[in-house]
Image (cartoon, rainbow, N blue to C red; front, side, top):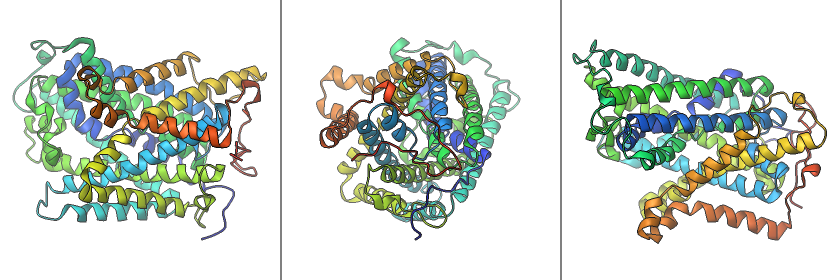
Length: 493
């Protein structure tokens, strides 16, 4: 291993950044969970929830884009929280996000075994999970361009699947395939289009939020993009419209072909993901016999892609925290190819240990998974808050918005709306548990919130940090080919 270099390698091309951002939020949330969303809120309620969440994600990504083009760094929103709000918040956000993705990798490799059981049910589950973890580790230990290229092709598979699904779905709606034209009759069937009113929409809003998590990866990739000033804004605009297009049209097709009352939309069990996918059901109704096998392959690709992205994101976050003084410096060491190998090893070890708890201590495993549940929304909250203070400080210090290489539209409405909706989604995770006084379930659902608060308060007490006044915030842009990408970040001394 070489001595630590000034920065990681900028080996991600524009097409890599765009596909990583796109692929990061197209997964089992769309392929599987969308059916339950339609069942719970009806076709109209599901569409409204996903459109509203999509708008929020757009504002979130433009906020991230403004900061990422000004300071493209692997630490992303952890660094922005430290620079523009409070070093202790950056500390809490960084560890929160690293923990989230390290646990998610373990969840994904566990899911790989469930998917493979569709074809080879008699092979021990841990074998498939072990193979998946080794493959993902090997991809990430190579040059960052290898990760980018792998994600590009896996994301492309998902995109092509959605296009084929939309085409088949439209032909099924009109009776060209499947032999029975449903038209739009399912949109007015029984209580449709809106089922369970506002509570139904809110319940889907939470599901939609989980589906869209992963879009913030574009901020982390900015640290290794070869031209972040061009590729990040391009990815943000392209990904938003494609996500809205894919999700809204896919849900529209599913709702038109399958009535919201169908038990098929709820899925049968976690052990037959491909069979329970509404995509599979639509393909079967169109007369495609191999639908389950095809969708199983696509879902397998999706799960591996998610684990791969999670390994990359958590590794880069741990590296950035070490680089900024928030984690042991040893994790900031880079290999000759610009890979933070020790950060990668640490993340892999945590993922492996978490996975092993699913065998030796299933209750511990469930707690760890639950603890990572809200961390994505907490990260989004940090992004919105950081951007609000960054722009306020930027203008207060005499700068003009036109100086920024990319600027978010509708400021301050965008970040304020994101802050409000993040709070609503976080608080609305399990309203039923509060209504029933189920404190155990409340603790399981919301455990990540006190963990972040403890990290934040603990850092403030130990390091005696404080919220940075707007006129003292360093809003200076990074020099891509300059001295160091750390750019005099706030060190915890």
